[in-house]
Every structure is written in C-alpha cells, then in structure tokens.
Image (cartoon, rainbow, N blue to C red; front, top):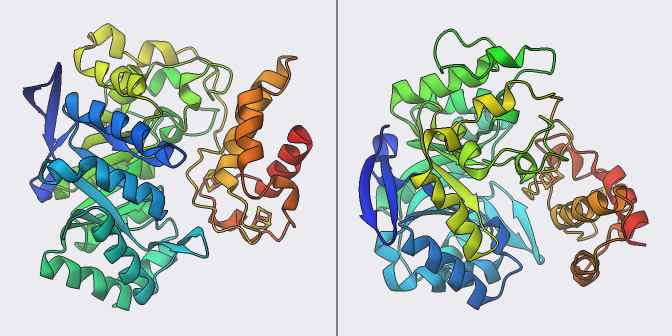
Length: 396
Ligand code: SF4
Ligand code: SF4
C-alpha cells in the first residue's frame, strides 16, 4: 500500500490505494467527530482547509442530522472528489445516536445521509461498529442486516463494503469472511502494545517478524488484511488526544501529531488516517506530516524509554456508549471532565470555557441514575457511572 505523490494546493499530499476497493485515498483524511458542536461556518472552514491540503476521504459515522447537514453542505460543490465513509446502523432516535441492526431503521438513516449529503451513493458503506465476535457472527449468519448491505452494494448505492471495529478478532474474521472490502480500525502505539510488563525497547524496532511486543492478535490481523488486500482506514490515531499530552499519555511523554500519524501509516495494510479537527489550524498541523523529516516522524526513540501503563479505562470520546437512558451525552461529559480535571489537579479552577460548554449540555452528569446500560457498550472499559459521579461533583 505504498503511496503516490501528488501536488495539490500548498501541500504534498500522498495518496494510497485502499486495498481492493481500488480507490486512491489521501494518506491523511478527515474524521468528523469534533464537528458536532461547530457552526456551519466553522465546518465549512475546516473542510475547506482539508480540501486545500489535498485530503479526499472523510468518515461520517455520526447520525446527528445537524452534523450530517453541515458536512453534506460543505462538500456539495465537489462531492465527486470526496470518498465518503458512511455507517449503516448508526441511527438517530429520540434525539440521540443509537446503534442498531434493525433494517428499517438502518434504511431510514442511510436515506437520510444520502439526502443530507446531496448524493445518491456512499463510497464506503460501513458495517457500523462491531466489537463483539458473537455479534459479528450473527451478522454474517444470513442476517437481514447483511442482506440489506449486499443489496446496497449490488444497486451501487454503496461502492464498497467496510466494517468499523476496535477488536482485531472481529477484524480478522471480517478479512476471512470475504464480505468486506476495507476496515476502519483503531491504530496507535498505545492500543497496539501488550501490557506494561513488556520491554518497550523491543516494541518499536523495525516492523517485521521479529517484533515480540505487539499484541499477537493485532499483528495477525494487520498481516491478514495486507495479504487479502483489505485496506485499513484508521481511527483513534492520537488515542483521543491523549498521546499528544505528556500528562495524559500512557507512555508519560507527549508524541507529536507527525509521530502518531507515522506510527499508524507504517502498520501493514493501512492506507489513511482519519483525524478529527477542531480548527483549520489543526488541519494544517496534521497535514504538515507530509513535509516532516524522518527525525520529526520518529516515534520510536521518544517511546523507547517512556514509562508505560495500560490504556484500558481511558475515554477516547468515541460516543459508542450512547444512548444513555437519561439522555446524557456521555462522551461530551467525559471530554469536559478531562479538560477541567487536568487544570483542577494542578491547583487551578475549572476553566470558564469548559464550564460553559458543560453548562450548555441539555442533560448533566448528576442526572445519571446508575442504570449501567452504557458500560457494556464501551470498547475501552470506562467506568462510566463513576465518571458521571466525578463529573457531577467537579462541575457542581
Ligand atoms: S448509567 Fe448513567 S450514564 Fe449510563 S446509561 Fe445509565 S443513566 Fe446514562
Ligand atoms: S465512555 Fe467509552 S464508549 Fe463512551 S465515549 Fe468514552 S470511550 Fe467511548
């Protein structure tokens, strides 16, 4: 999956073939989860900057009609140049995101996306978020949901079938199943490592057969994908921003965006990293990878001596825990809590801006009734009930 150069705008963006889909995707693309609380003008500016810098692939897993409309409008003028990753099974019900395999609900949500994106096709139609091997088997077992996805592909409404997962076991099964053409997978050095007892010096050498520190199932998955010509797009490149912040990184040191991007782009089968941006400046920071020197990209020497602990239990703000019984936006509460807690731990007050964002949420953490419905939906084992209690206390 080596790339080709192309000069576009002011940056030298490289493009890679996305496995057997045959599509040429920019090696840095757009994940849109940070756009939900932006204005249409802000979304337009961010997407405009992505376009200028040569990005051509974007993921919209969100079902929120507002963000879909903003994104659809932002790419309407040049829809054909964008490779859109849309998710079948991400639906909007009672004002909240809900993951479902119910075909009628999936159809409504898919048609809604087409309408809001001013289009009649989605390039990469994703089997949305499956982390449970059992659930994936039930999908593969001639489910109506799978039949719907095959039907979409046969009609051209989706051009290729994808899967989004954080679990290498599910990823491997997907590769073997022959049902999918590409996969979106979470890739960063934190998730890829074995527990803290491993010798990190062994983990970051040349990528090859001699690697002993990487989780064996992940390695097997990456290799199988490469062998089967299943291209990967990447989510969680920065582990929810945590790898960029020494205080929150499981390695105890901060990595730069270029180092994290380089890590992901040097895994087998990876074609593109899809990064969430909060501002046009952040788009430029990630795209600067294209012009970075090999020293600037070098993650190995930074991580080699870093202390490491497990990442389990850390929120990446992915939103998969929704819907909450009480309507709490759990990912946003966790994000605001983390932002505030860093300052408070250093003896400062809760930052005013963060307090304002928290106050603007429709439902607050203190309304959590500890029903526990959300916790099994979290791929990272976050103790959500505890976090809601802590957030309620922090924000008063
Ligand atoms: S435990 Fe709390 S946050 Fe989780 S679904 Fe129930 S009310 Fe919502
Ligand atoms: S609690 Fe878990 S599922 Fe919810 S946003 Fe955080 S990491 Fe994602």
